[in-house]
Image (cartoon, rainbow, N blue to C red; front, side):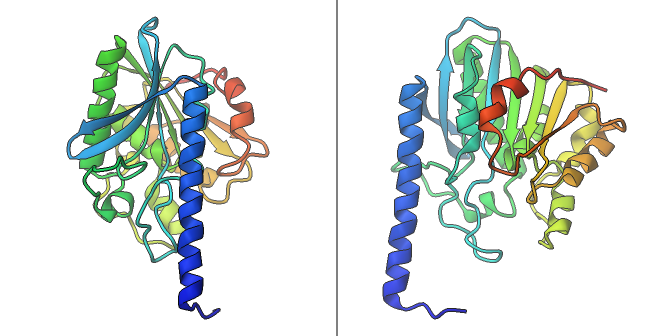
Length: 274
């Protein structure tokens, strides 16, 4: 291990700050270009950052849920700011041509100035806790009312896929569910990476049988070594999809790359239910 002196540490902090600010600038620029409006939603107990484009001309609100973001600095050190360096769910949302589109960041991500701090547990062990899921669900309700929609289509990326499944289990208005590189079986994910289980979090696998009637599509990256196909398959087993009719393996895609350029075509792939 290389020694770290004070000067090295200072420069490391500066570089990381530049990365964060660059990422924020990128999302703001893209939001303006694609006419997405930024909004801070109070969904107790959290303030959540949202971007949306609402025309009111559709009865469906399409909701994109961000992944876990920059949750960890290392395997044992949690981040002080989980804002994603590459907010893939946001960039997928801006490609969606649906009339009503909502992007929801997770607790602690893109935290607005002056908003209360969020406990690190909510992007580590409690990232899928009941209070997180209830908060995300409340935020969806608020924007649904604003949009005039009466149906919800959920799309979750990585850890946001787990959130999407758990939210779907609470609702009776979800007509479509898509996941991208989704951590749908956190216990299997933890076993594969030799990590501790997520104590304090809900497990999407436990609600899988209750949502199998919702039309859905689960995309897995053929080169994804972070969330493997086996994680998705464990969820599908619990859901009763033995034939894997709801899973699509995307050739050449890994956990973060190979999605944006194909997203509009992937959205056209039919959904199935059990």
